[in-house]
Structure formats: C-alpha cells, structure tokens
Length: 319
Image: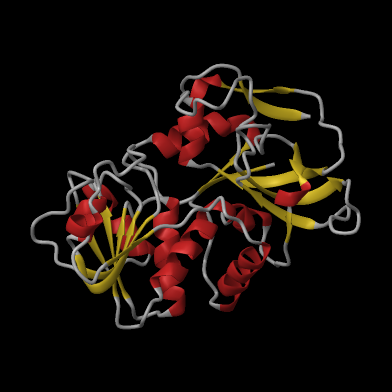
C-alpha cells in the first residue's frame, strides 16, 4: 500500500509518500480502508519532534474515516462497515491514518450511521467531536453571548456552527491575530470579529461574554476568565498558544467569583457521543464541508497550508 512515513523530525519535507507493507489483521485489531482524515495541529507538533513519546519511523494520523476491510471481530465490525476512529494513540504509539489502509485496535473503531459524503465525514472526527464536547459543556441558552478564541481554526469554526445550528440567532464573536481573516470569519457565520495582535490578551475595549471557547489554551486562560460574565463558562480546550500547563494557578484568586472553568478531552471517546454528534449535525443541517481538500501524495502541502498565515478552517485528505 501507499503511505506517508516520517523517518525523522523536521518540516513538511519529512513527510515521505512511499510504498510499505499492508498491515495484517491480528487478534483484537482490524484493518480499515482509509477513505479520508483531517489534518490536526497535534500531528504537526509530532512531525516537528515535539512529542517525546513518539519514535520514528512512524505513519502519523490521529483520526480516520473509512470501511472495515479485514476484521478480527466480524460480529461488531463486519467487513464493509462504515467507521470513525480517533485518538487512542493512533499515529503515535502505532501507525495511524496517513495511508491507504490502517490497522487499528477494535476498541477504537466506532461504527457509524451517516449519509454524509466521505469528504464531509473526513472533516468531522477530531474537530467536531472536540467542538461538540465544548458545545455540550456550555449548556447554551439562546440569549447567550459567545466568544471563540482562535476562531479561524477548524475547531473554532465548528463551535460557531454548532452554536448557530442550535440557536440561529445567538451572537458568536471570533478572534484572530490576522486582520485579513476578518471577512472570512464573518462569511463563515460569525457575527463579530476581534483582532488580537497578542493572541493571549484581548484588547482593552473587549467586554465580557457568557460562554468562551478558549482554543489558545493555558497561555490565555487567565485573560479569558477576566472577560466572563457572572455564572458564565470558559472551556479551555486547545493548546494553540504552545503552552501545555497552567502553572502557578490559584483557583481562588484566578477564577472570579461565580464563574466556571472547564475543558474537554477528546481522548475520552464514546460511541454514543459520536453518533449523537452525527445526528445533531444532520438534524440541524450543519455545513461541515472542509475548506481545503488534498490527496495522500500531497499531504506535505496540507501541512504547509495549515501552518501558513492563510490557513482557515478544516483541512482534509482523501484517498
């Protein structure tokens, strides 16, 4: 089969498209024919060598959509079954989705029922599962004001779409460091845009919100809490600021009274939640189409786009 293999840490040029042996089924694992997958920032971090537990050579890819091609569990995972797989150390401890076929543990293969095209389904797994977790934690009301920090990311756009899908008139504001992306955000469906030259610090004129999706992460958490209305919720679910932990955090002093801080870990995967997400998307007619589509031989170009100043929304690769 063809796959994209990383043999050493580096830039997009280390993503090598080549022929490798097709993996064989073993007990507890089944093989899927990969129809497509999204590109994620965490894969860029791994490619750059920022994931110490990952040893090269490795086929990256933390998510996939496709069909069961060969199975060790024909009852629950029959050949031809449409499945989604996310997280579970795929693309890290073992080879992931940057390939025509992937051998994955049965426990992280989730059968799904959906009429979405492969292109649209490929845009969903990690991005929309994360966004759906944020959306659920918000306990949204139609009168809420919502802020999405790092709104041009795939998850940022998805959070807005889910909120608007549930309450079309709800006001959602997005942030970006790049003024040139303001029109893209408005066209995507955001009601207002805040340009933040410093991603970690909202401008002084910005007021407060009922719900904040903080995709910047720990480097911006304290600032997000200061822009939260009473009884509001901040979901810190992202690490785009490049900081992984909230060091020296004092809950009593750093969380203003009667405000709430939460997060969502997409590694806690639920079959029920995945199908609920797909059903929600279908019921509310949410447009999940990716912004850019690449093929497997050009996956390095997908990485370059996602790393570029012009990147916006979800990027997928189709086989």
